[in-house]
Image 1 (cartoon, rainbow, N blue to C red):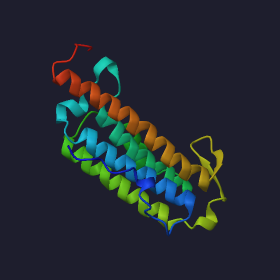
Image 2 (tube, helix red, strand yellow; image 1 turned 30 degrees about the horizontal axis):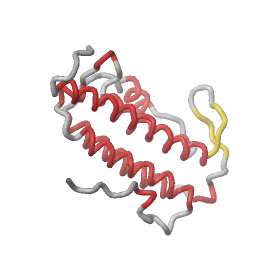
Image 3 (cartoon, rainbow, N blue to C red; image 1 turned 135 degrees about the vertical axis):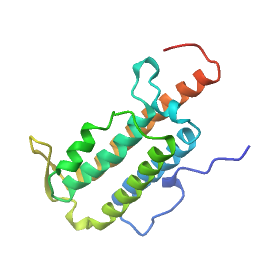
Length: 175
């Protein structure tokens, strides 16, 4: 049995980035590693399964990538476009193979990290607004929420993946 390496924030990586930016990037790295560990083994049917009517693993991986795109659009001082709004409406569509969903998830994390790095740390206190109601926040608030929101959905995806795997292994029927 191989020993799992420490979480990204304990590896001493990204030391050339300011602490808050580093923390957000580490959260995205951890998300990618956790999804790979727990969700790559799932079949397409398992990715879309909804035991106990929980949101599917597929929903969570699609939602993470989409929410990062939306939050970073706000952080960059822009409004959502029609494509982003349509993607939001389709997040729970229940389509896509396990492979395509995970590739899109990983691409979303990579794109998010690049966008985070492109935002100057000096701009983190700049005011921003979110959503149709244009709720007030800052660039920093949006970036910290990228980390928080991503980790919340990763935890939910892992929990659902474990339930789906237990059911596939002959665990108790809990549909």
